[in-house]
Structure formats: structure tokens, C-alpha cells
Image 1 (tube, rainbow, N blue to C red):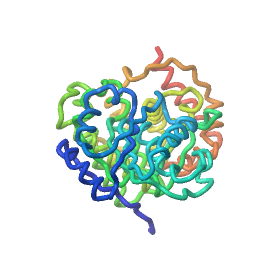
Image 2: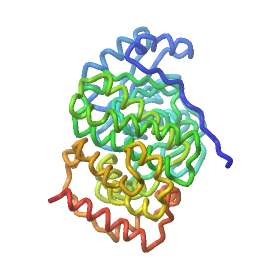
Image 3: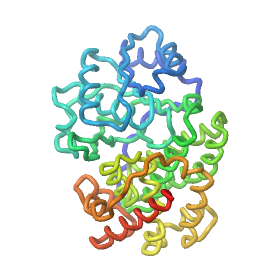
Length: 379
């Protein structure tokens, strides 16, 4: 088997590393930074700590709008960043903030908007250095070359390129302790979905599977505790490590049907990403195992069960992590529409990477299973 493992950023783990951040920028011969920050973090204490650590660096701050990245949001942030030549781009926040920061860094040197690069339509022509400081433990965006962005029609699309891989990642558990329980749950289960699908998909390999399996073990160990004890730094650090490992896994091996369906749910009903992929994973896991049992044997070992028992073990895990409380919308889902969007160009890479081959009639079957699971939570 031939495969290619992408470059891994420099990763600093632990709360002590912020103190050396200004020195790192100096070593890069950069004297300014544009902080791209989500609104919740911008109002909290951590941003003050970060700015203090950047003493001597000229700082500009751009607060991103609520919600997942959009073409308009990325382009507006890029226009702002272009006013600060040679500034390092620092993303501080969850997956949305990091994805916006990464895309800004990749287009700020050009005059094109991010729509020019959707679905790899055109190569990036330059970049700025990127520092990623994740405040949630889910997307793994801090170590991936892929970003999510919705176009002007509301379609949930993606961009990809080495230019969007951060140069430096800081995993500081202190920034995650104020995360609400429902966000801890949904982002942590997103990381689990990344790990499981990277470990079972057609593009899996020994290295990405190693990262994915350890991520699953860490999530099983730490996520229930993180939900119950949000200020437990040990478990918060464990979840950061898990999300990062799962991010490395999907960056090299991709995702599968849960993300294919999850992206469709995001486009159609604006269901938050972590909730959408978790619903889809619960709905499709037993079906996948039935047709690709051996692919799930190592994941089943994480739970101490057989592959045939894994689906029920996952449902128990959802109860342990209080997943039902993370669902904040009552959208009415339509299986036929979901099945059609699963086959859209932006979702085909995930569909085709799934552990079990999915034909046209099975797309509708899986969409119907997803609706059934969703309606169960609505009761």
C-alpha cells in the first residue's frame, strides 16, 4: 500500500507555552499579529492573557460572527487582515474561528475571495504564517489542511491546501474550562466520529489508524468526566490531545458516511456540525458494521466489546456524555432530500471513503435511518 502522510505543525501542549509566544514571532521576524477570535472568547479572560503574552507585538483583533464559516465572513476577515502587511494570523476559538483564520491566511496575499478556491477549483498563490489556539476539543482544525465554508447559496462546502496548515499549535487546557457542557459533548463526539471514520475508511493506513485509535481511547476515558467536571484540567488536556490526534487522522485518511450525512444536515437544516455527525453515526453504525465487520474490530476493542456489540456500546456512550442535551433544534428532516444531497460533489469524497460501499438505494435507506434516530430524540 502506498500513502502520503502530510506535514504535522509544531504542537506545544500545556498552559506554560503562551509565555514564549512573542519570542516565537520574533524568531519568525514578524512584529505584528491579527487575532481572529470568536465572540465568546473575545469577551473572556483568556484573550487578555494571550495579549499579555504578545507584549511587544503589534496586535489587531477581528471578532468573527456567530455560526459556522461563510464565504462572506471569510472574505470580510481577509479584507481586514490585508490592512496589516506581514502580520501573523492567529486563530483563537472553536473550529469556525480556526477555519476562518486558516482560509484568511491562505487568501490574504491575493485579491481573490475564498469562493475562487472552493472544492480545490484553483490553487492558493501565497500565505501568511498561522498560529492555531483551539478553545474546543472537537474539529481538530488546528492540524488539518481542510476548512469548511458555506457559499452564498448556503451549501456547506470545503477548501483544501497545504497553505492552510498551521505553523504552530498551542493546546492550552485552561482555555477550554469555561466551555458549556453541551458544547463539550457535541465537539467531543465530533472528534470521536473523526477517529472512528478515519480508522475504518478506505483510505486508512497504519499511521493514521494509530492516531485514531488512541484518540478514541482518550475520548472514551475523558469525555464523560469533562462533561461532569468542566474544570478538571487533566481531562480537558486529554480531550485536547484526542481532538488533535483525530484531526491528524482525518487529515490523512478522511471521513465517511456520518460526515457525508452530517454535512447534508448542516446545509439543509443548519444543525451544528458535532450534533449532525453524531446523529448520523448513531444511525449508520450498525449498518456499516453489518457490511464491513472486520473494519470495526479495533474500534470495538476500545469499548471492550465485539464488533456486533459496538453500535449498542456507542449508544450507551452517548447517554454517558449526555448527548441528548446537546440537541438544541427541532428541525423536521426529509429523507429524500438528504439522500440527494449526500451525492452532491462536495459530499462525494466522504461517501466514497466509507467503510461499506453505498449505492443509490442505500443512500435513501441511510437517510431514513438518520431521520428515525433524529425523531427519537425529538420525543
